[in-house]
Length: 337
Image (cartoon, rainbow, N blue to C red; front, side, top):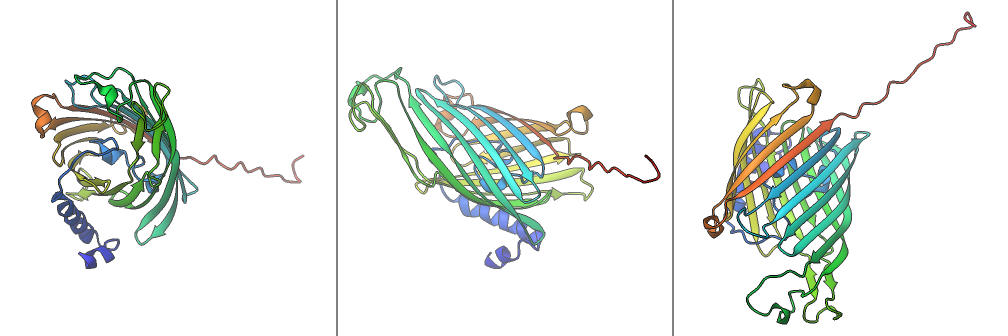
């Protein structure tokens, strides 16, 4: 494994072995709750978990994701995300991510800016990125419980909200249209959000006290042109995420036909199995060149599956090249006045 890692940027077959080995390494861990929201179509959403990926598409890209999880439950998670990134001057990537998640009485909003420096390394490019932003968490006052929740100091009994800053770092190595691998850490400061309710001071009964845990991500993916004619491309990928107390692994296999339509399956440890499908409109509707649409449906494999009708997620992505304006040259001759 060590020998393979040292030479993976020079040997595609070795890179495939690295991805498979990494998947088996993490598959042995059980998954529990994660503070960060999860996405089934995470392969289209690299920027939100790794700032080093900013600009890796080589142009300007915008991505919109919306997810409804645990359908059938009142107060189920409703998650929305918009991200945009661009590559400037072949070396500088910039990105923006705006995120909102609502779960019961809890609402989380965050916005962050990312920067990455792209360094040519072997046959590919290494993106070294950092991000800065803010997180706002608020709780409503419509909590429903059998017991007297005002006696639990961890449950606010009135509207509360708090905001704090956030930061992250990531490395993202990629060979365009071939493979990628990344490692990142989010919420590095591990800040705490506090607010008082009903005129109390933070820490009293009915106050907000939320500690943000540092998260770590490892991602990898490979594009295998099965017949060497780009008609059928197999796209396996993994995303491992942990906050050191628990770990979760998403393993996905998709197949892309004629660079136009794709389908696949994904498995999230101890949580769900999902079906994915999508279309790239570039070849079928020239006026919509660069536009992709995807959808996924999760079926819960945990005990929640007996009460939930699954999760539904939609993805819309648009990318275009940054076209430099032509240089206007004016020729002057003394022969013409």
